[in-house]
Image (cartoon, rainbow, N blue to C red; front, side, top):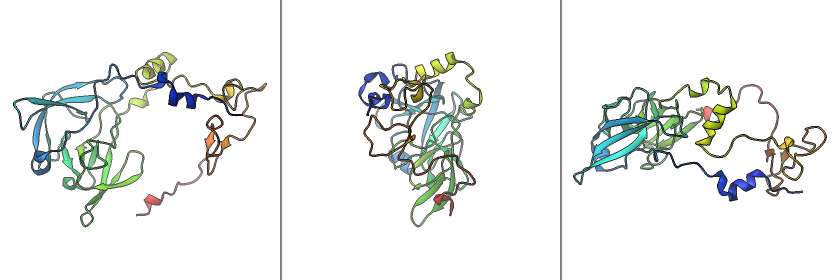
Length: 257
């Protein structure tokens, strides 16, 4: 029998929304313009700030507006080695220095980059978490594409016109230190969203979860479930092709080249 499980409530209830009141804002590259396409623009790092709910620090960068007498402030990913007062350069003619933003076509193979765009002008999509980076593997000049190795280990082909920041995202090694106590986990997730603590399905009552109830905590049915199952039954290993431990070396189709 289907239950009204927590995964269903997450889609409907407002209590699972992200906690954004104290956040500093969206972290993006500059909007792409003529100056970035043809030359470069210079910005100065005004501040490096902590953003609640984000593991990596963010940099407040100020640029001169090209069309009006004013300054534009952007929030960008802080890379390791950035400091306040540093000049950073964005554009095709910018130098290959940590913190600068360049199109991948201007970046040599083997360079470590972060905050890489997926499509030209989307202002950053890949390798944005603390300590993350992508590696430029190769350029295909005939097709105008570049191959990247992402933090997950997967490889991805993107257009060579997409922009990326040079360097590694700051705040690396954050997960090396254990949380040690529940209070730290509480504060960690309090600024993110309502997703902690997580109660196991077998610890619940039968009305709350398909795995609930019974005199001992046991699932009592296969943990694999069809992807066509109704929402209240769809818990456990959904539409699993295989189960059990992964043994041996994982062979990826993308590793052949």
